[in-house]
Image 1 (tube, helix red, strand yellow):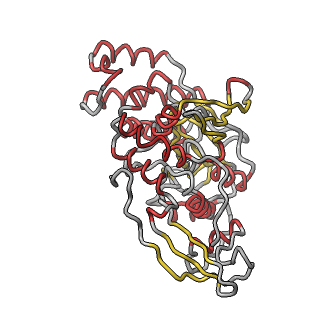
Image 2 (cartoon, rainbow, N blue to C red):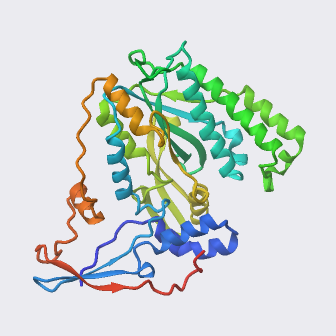
Image 3 (cartoon, rainbow, N blue to C red):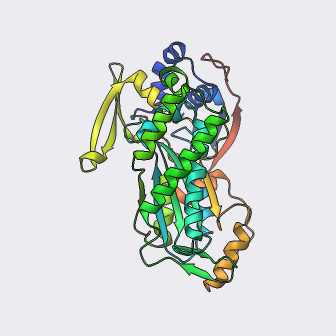
Length: 397
């Protein structure tokens, strides 16, 4: 029977060893419990699987099912690659910019306890800032397109909500008859974006409070009082809100490479975990404040779990959103119009049979799971389906 060697420490290993006690000590909302449960059972007998046998040499291989949870470090690759291929078909022969919007740390405690409401405000503020400034004749006078991607973490796993955007370097004129390009190497003025973004976010934050959509548990209970909340708002208006616009991507290939790095990323991948010993977890991180040096951080195992769970999103919350000419409702028609104006030849699309995940894995990685690991013949056939096991751990949520 073939088994795979496993030498690295994974998030699942940390949950297996310390998760039960952590759940008993810390009441958790259902999305976090589900995420923990999914990661713990991913590719184990708990989720079932199948047995393949080589028709040439008789070697048997057991493969267990994946959890497919979007927070699982082992379940993002194929989903990410398929998403990127779909987006690659939408790219135009133009420059694209990378713009990052970050909220001040003063907001983090409030955001952490009101994730759905304030992440929604973050998306809305970013999208309106970009769309409105681009439509202004002073800046561009066109409808742009952009993809917004929510990240909630920093390299040290602490909460750090920010949105990455990939923006077209130009857009459609208001009448749809012209393509208007950005100035070479320049998108929109950063200071103007920052001030408008700040104003919009705080205006929507005040509206959300007035509509009683926010809660103030635990250490932020003082914000329930008008004086404390108003003082927070005043301090936020005085802060400089960080908006960073990077140089244009190096062609469409650069855009796709970027999307591959950022779209389906989770708080920490398994390869960054160095060790788990003496109830402590060590992991690699980049210290941007110290010349972007790679360092090792060691924290208590329970603290590692706490930090990881900070970034479990509310159920059904959409973390990748499309706007403007890339918006889901009108994407095809507007991109066709853009290609015509740019005189870009649209690739002929041929109706193709949808790939299985096995075929995608072979095409992208060269990993052929139909090939026997013992004799090398491509003769593996499924001979048995393994039903999900009754779990001895915490109940399914």
